[in-house]
Length: 182
Image (cartoon, rainbow, N blue to C red):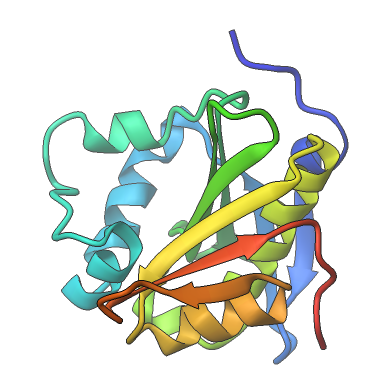
């Protein structure tokens, strides 16, 4: 049974991107499946790889249903969509997966290629970190490739401490309730 949403988790918010474009942030819903599939269709293979760290089979039967059914307890996912609603597509999705260790979660983000570098990822990251803080999570971890400069800059901006893997291919970011850096 999903945990009741309160505070930042319950709030659907209209926000403005740095260029003034309005978008809405809201929790993902099971009826987002077709929009989730369209989001992935609008992403390059490189973007999907950067998100999942392998060539994720997003077209596989049942995959969209699984990713759109976040339970609100262990999996918390937020989507960004355009306003006004004349474009029914999703611009991006940010997801927290609460770990088995008390107080920790993994964070991942995917933004449509044509909406990257416009503030969508920052808006989703801020919302997910607000939810993490409200839940009392003291540690959020995100992992990406060392070549994913946009995500690395975003993680730094929101206070993640970054460390590179021994092979130099992967970077792990750890957020411990830090403050956004402007």
